[in-house]
Length: 385
Image (cartoon, rainbow, N blue to C red; front, side):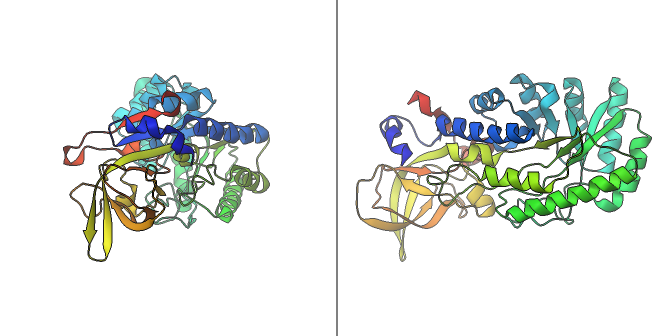
């Protein structure tokens, strides 16, 4: 596998650490932006997936904007040099301080998720002598058929404005002197594998557009969010998401008006496969009918498996053994949920072996924490080793 050429460099480093293959990231960005140019689309990187400054610098250079879900993310995007006209701000719970940060920064658009939020943004914009551009994040009641913890487009989810609220919303916007409605925003979930879900979303957007036009409202922007899946099972063989099929699906089904701009908010699909969590085996423990490979990385370094049962491919990158064994790969944190994989087949594994947990470029380092007072893991990059 491609990591083997870095093993000698890895052996000199204190584990655990995050490793980014910037060649994979560069190839991913080039492929993604090729399709943006082909169809004339625009995109804003979902900073919640990864806020590492070196990663953000590459994404900024690729021409993408920033999709933020907190005031601190907005400020970081501004500090990293993202043009304010490429920064969008979503989230169901924007505080007054965060809204003021975004207004002061002159960002492109607030993706608004509730009637109270629209009112507050208008009030704060009025106090600051500014006009806030907003898109309405609508809840299209579409099941993304993904993990229940990361689906966001069903009527029972906390995200977005429901269809039955729209008449009231338009009345509030009409009475708000410091609000300008510029578009619609959608995001139905993450790790969506079924392209029919995106086809269904496009048809729902088409229906919404007709409704707004019947109310004499012509929208400048349509934002379809993100959600395209990555291959967690075979990341080495499939380092890129199916961008071509995805964009063909959007282009074939979305009815774009003349002069209208279409936006996306990719996160995981751009960054996941370029990242790894590298860890050493502390002990191999014999249990009743099983073996545990106990790592020095824990759920504080990669919380996805503990948080919602996510699976990551796991490799022993230093064992030379031809013998295969089955291990539960676990961490040292005092929680039974602190495990990365159950019944994982690896070469015979022993103390000191290096383990690579794949596809951690998204929601890995950015979700790191100091539970059990453990140190935050460092990050290293392919050109430097």
